[in-house]
Length: 185
Image (cartoon, rainbow, N blue to C red):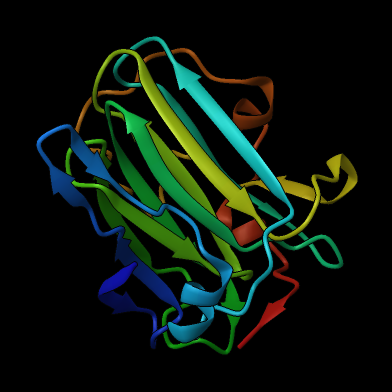
């Protein structure tokens, strides 16, 4: 795994797994805890999640979990393409309320590492898109929160028109200005 770039004062990483080619195809090591430690990613991942979206324009997010169930995430696309969104929720951060966008696809082989203190979401840019991500803490419905994907304060340009297919959780998200963030820099 190599770092392509760092964001939010070197806390969010765009990573790329190395591919080793031969006449049969290629091999790639997608996760290695020791390799991540060498990149200064110390989080231990305890759960793998998989998201499948049938249609282009499906939005999922902006999600996060409050302490003590906050989560780091390691996100990648196994089929299709997404616009991945990361939102800084850390009080006292110079980037509080700022977003960073990443295009992740099976073709570019990128991963995004997102530490606790950030909300995460994405929109599918292809039909039949598959996203896998590791998390550093177990899911807790009691601690999950959603910020509205179309919050006017954030003015996120999702690049394509979203489908009107949202989960109930995403429909009931809160506005960013109503958030009392539990995270600190």
